Length: 252
Image (tube, rainbow, N blue to C red; front, side, top):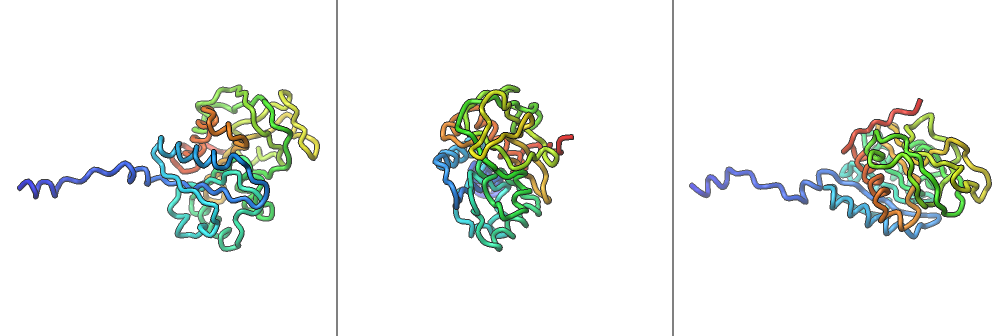
């Protein structure tokens, strides 16, 4: 009788199995400049996964961009990829189908310095990198706390990073989550110029059936031990993975 009763009791689901219900892929392949902070970023995301109940795989092998493999992930994180990291038409097409089927994308820092000959990807990110000035402290203005990626951040956020200028302002097609105040640092990049009074640094939008979040923060290794940045990163992961509200209608 005891054996029969035991057989009727559903076994407890292991914590690892529960975590695997949400899984993200960190992709950090570079064919241009390579950021020294990439290992720090991978380790930080893995720790966020351990602490917050989601699984993390990491790769620099774009042959893993197949329909079958990408279907395992709620989000793909492009972590400071550069150049042309998704190298084949087949891998590009598989990633497009993944987004079209409702997948999630999070671009971190140099993810915008990628895919210059892949217009679809440029639309996914929202804007391409242009240049940057030297690393320095500046004031980030957080555009409200209404999303998972911003709700734990102060309205005025002083931090040190490498501040990107972009080839275009994405505001018309995205919800801007944070801007940088150019009056608080020298914004002139190595090719000259700045973006002016409206200088987005993080944003989100729905794109081609999927979810896309981008943050230009994260050049330095120190970023990945910075509590507020880690909260911002975790919120972006949750939004991209569909684990948090995705309230990302474009700015009016």
